[in-house]
Length: 283
Image (cartoon, rainbow, N blue to C red; front, side, top):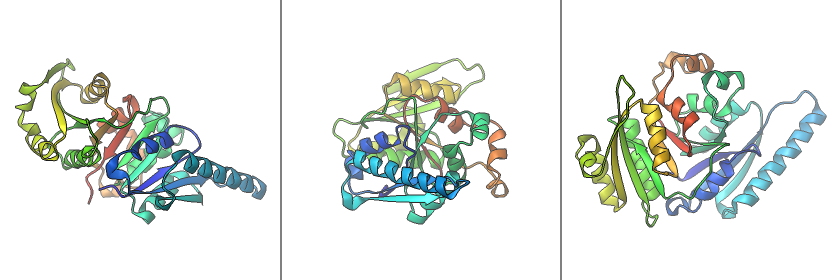
């Protein structure tokens, strides 16, 4: 399911640390990793040369830090707008996963501060793993998936099972949050939560893989509850489905699109205290 990973590095943040943790996941041992650094265009040739040299060092340091099998890793140094180049390279190598650092900016801040990760997420249909600068990256063992009836949530479940299937002692936390008008929290776990039919397919698939699991049902404000549950259950990675709700005519109006409403995925990517993998419904 994941055999081509694009790791975008800037010399800052925890994206490299996240990749290092993923490299220990048995199902990813043979994955090909392309490490990308993008050099923005400069006003002078001298400055451009300097930035290319700095970019080469950033790539070399990242690859040295990762300590991956040399046959499974390659470096890519490109010039241009990082927002566009990351998406372009992901398409070129047909990446199954994009890993990027994220400053955890809210919508308007994302526009004003030119957020690369938010822009790429808006345009790409590929799964993205966002790693905020202010979180602690841990070894992958406990993964949480937000379950609903969407195809994107089903893709998240399959991705989580793929990651956990050969990790000894791993655990999958299945959660479903029902929205209520008051925002008051109501949580149920254990056997009674398993009886919720929303989990039936997920439980069947998880049992088939022999992976330990827990079910939690809750109600409240979905974004806040998902973040709270991820934090209280000490999860190492949160997977969230993010169906593409935009009409095709708005695909290229990224900045305008970000100003319209507030999506669940936007709230979670900003407020979660663990790395977040956002998965769209793939065509």
